[in-house]
Length: 110
Image (cartoon, rainbow, N blue to C red; front, side, top):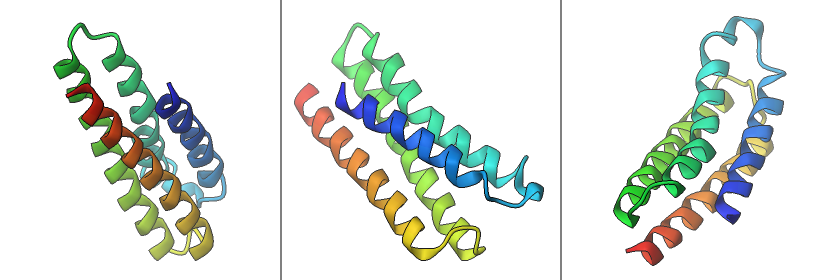
């Protein structure tokens, strides 16, 4: 499933991005960003195992919520100068791409 593959790539990107964050964020922003990123493919995978499209859509909505959370955390990281503007824009583009893919997939399921 392409949305799962893209979201797994996003997880890797987030882990690499947060390596350069200050140590004081280890249990704050870093942890929150990583958990939000991991939530996306995890919920896609869990939803795909459900017996109805309605249940699958619910898990896709959770994934979308995690993407919005991650996007907010990316903006915050840029505002705190943990990320440069270009990197922030690149990761937000990937997030938006996955959001659109999930939306389109949900439309097909309904």
